[in-house]
Image (cartoon, rainbow, N blue to C red; front, side, top):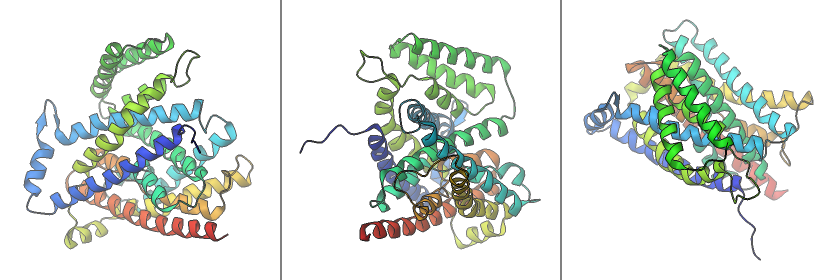
Length: 386
């Protein structure tokens, strides 16, 4: 029997799942390098400066811009022609993502109130990692319907977009109006060329690089450029086109984003000490404990609670074939913060405080992954037995 073409969502999920495995491997390598005699060489490479930025900063400011460009493309496609193009389908993950940001932030503030650094680190547990969460879901939830994957992907993309807005508002220490104006002009030019159906990469690549540079120089975190360009890219094809520009760009760039950009970022961001002394210091740090509580408790309560309230108030409907126990297991995956949480921790804190909070993100993400995996395996077995 001949199979039909693979859906865009299935293709995206497959690449993100593989990317999640590569991300896990890069994290393991980072932890080994940072907790062995190679630590000095590892830190020397990470801190080596190229132009104005260190290698670690290039991974954080440069490579992650590619990740957020692909996330912006995915969100635009889902909103225009995908699963989120219908209001009832779109509103539930948006509400869930909102609850999954507000409640973890509230939990983190409640636990860490008054502790030095919580005034900046409260945003760390707001994000859900797309690649890692989808990887765990794909490995453990084969018995669940595809609607679970659509819901998690949509939630994680909206969640990351919200986290990027927080980054733009919270971590813009100095603002260069001229550079910001240049970025706006370049974005307007990009949108105009998309509207006019211009396809030359010789125009788009310099505009994209110029936008990244202008946003970086403006004082706003450079990853905002990636999201903005992704959301301005056309994703609905014309009658004479095989694929819209956004779809073509997803096909070309998503493997580089999932297989290179995010793992390299993790390689330089996840290298934190995990000795018994370091773990003890982390658990004595109220900000780190606040982050753990936000990710493990706040995410589950926020995502599941917001979903439950939206359905009970008839603002939205549950995804097809999913029950409340399935939603609880998927909500637990929201506690996998990782990529964007590590990014916010890097931006919010310095030195030992940053390392303790990043260790807290790694610990909470690992625990959330294991708990969610156990819940998802149980749900998959129950569904097969039914």
